[in-house]
Image (tube, rainbow, N blue to C red):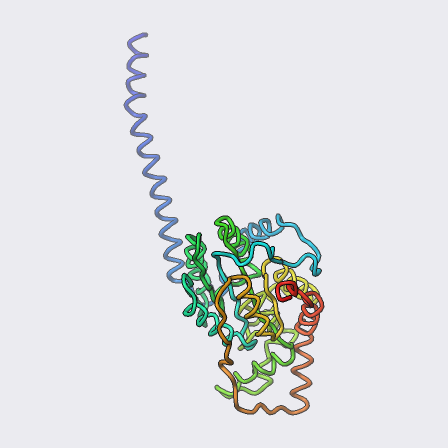
Length: 345
């Protein structure tokens, strides 16, 4: 009996490592097959699949993003709740100037001025990554992870975000994280953007229809009510702020909700928000950074004429208003009136 039990234990001790090795091999094979399948499907993904992943996160990813965002307190967008600066700590000795460049708002002039400020001041660098196609955001985010590190004690970095760089509505957690990474170093994270009159912005964008010779109806077709899920030839200001170059209303929310979300993004993340006030922009940036002043010159001006019929002008006004831009800019004027005046007194 004892001999039988001893033999049984020997058999068990002999086959146990073999069984474990077989189990490990099968598991590794399954992981390899799954990984290979994922990478293969990624390589063979159609442009439409990439488009969907870029602008429509899968439900599980969307839930994670929403949960993280909802963990932050929601406060009313009033002047007292806007981002501000402790003047006693200015100028910051190091930090990030995060310029979110909305097309046709004078951003080219601002971007050129920031570049000249980099050349005119020590320990300042400039970095940008944007494009005209899907897939740019991943590289922008990867680049930003490097930009926000190693700033102290005296480094400033200018970051220029533009087309496809960042989609704030779905990538908002990164804005929180980058600010935290910079401020932990005792530096300043200064996010800024420029806005302008809503209808004037749509008219300014229409210069893009000259080549390749669109009609106005074709150019603003994505603003038609039924085309909320369509990516347009251009984006209005509210859409550029919330969705960048994605579809103009990808979740088909109401106009009021879209305006609320746009103002919320400004209030949570942007320190300097202005309406066509470039002199004010340069003075505030110089106050915050301590940089030596550089004169801003106008850039990327359009000198040709834009002629519209009365019907076309009425259509521009109607669709711009229906999209939420008029209400959004009106809200910004009221909420940000007098914001940061104390820095200029």
